[in-house]
Length: 221
Ligand SMILES: [Zn+2]
Ligand SMILES: [Zn+2]
Image (tube, rainbow, N blue to C red; front, side, top):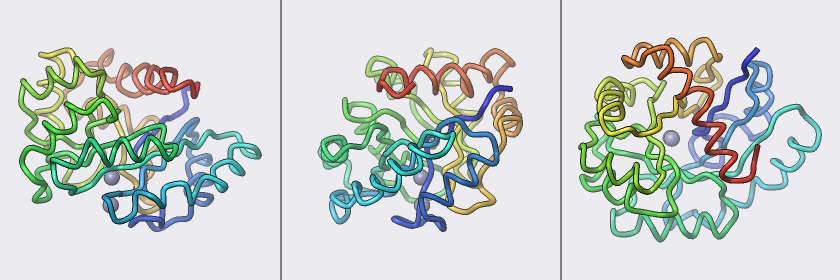
């Protein structure tokens, strides 16, 4: 059976409801192979990222799941996104997500652009009405685009899928989990990919091949 990989999740070290250990435990029970904990950061808290590293090491040593330290640069001024992402990487974040221009929140226009231009960013989360030009820069810079399982953020999924097909971007299906009920099964991630308008092959790339390829590029798988 193919296991799930989810690279966008929050613990209570930002606004999630669960400690890293309970988040990992619940993910393990729903057949996840890898999760990334990507707590929200700006300059106020980016230096606290390593606080969960001991818990991650403990989980990885003892349970049949891999937890990856990440961060999500969230609602920071566009001018600072690259520097905050770089700081997160310096502190040990393996996966840096940028909180993209979701239709659901007043994210600063220019955030998608700043994210795709940063060599320190891996995933542009919920990019809303991303432009073709932004998608082309993301492709050049090996930045993955997110199909979001999250209520509100998912409103742009169909557009993101269309742009990615046209430009050739690699997609991921991530949950942006904050609460236990946000976690999804592999089968649900497939349905969400189809719901975004992806074909079977495109959906399988987004939920199997692309996350594996990203993790391999980080030396994680
Ligand atoms: Zn949040
Ligand atoms: Zn998030």
